[in-house]
View 1 (cartoon, helix red, strand yellow):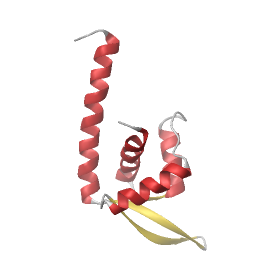
View 2 (tube, rainbow, N blue to C red):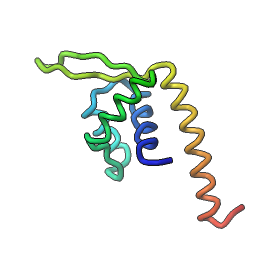
View 3 (cartoon, helix red, strand yellow):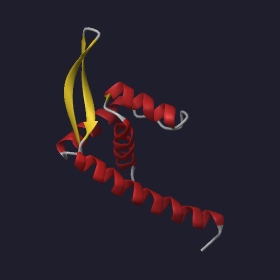
View 4 (cartoon, one colour):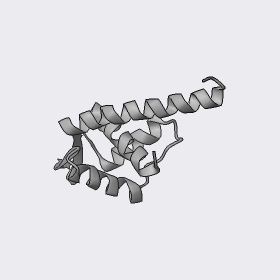
Length: 104
């Protein structure tokens, strides 16, 4: 799984909890990964646009404190895609653990 695919999966996972705007998505990825992962703006927004074009997320503008923000939310198709991505990721990490751990 390449970096873009990983970021797509992480964004879907963040949005599975609740709708968020772009900056909050980036912060959630950083916080939940204990600072090991970052969703830089140059990668995050193209991924958000692609996920929306694919029908996996939707967005709407929200007025917050006098500022307009675009809030993203997971669609039903996005929920299903996240389930598939989680299964793929678990299979890949299990295979790597087997090789690194010397089992199999």
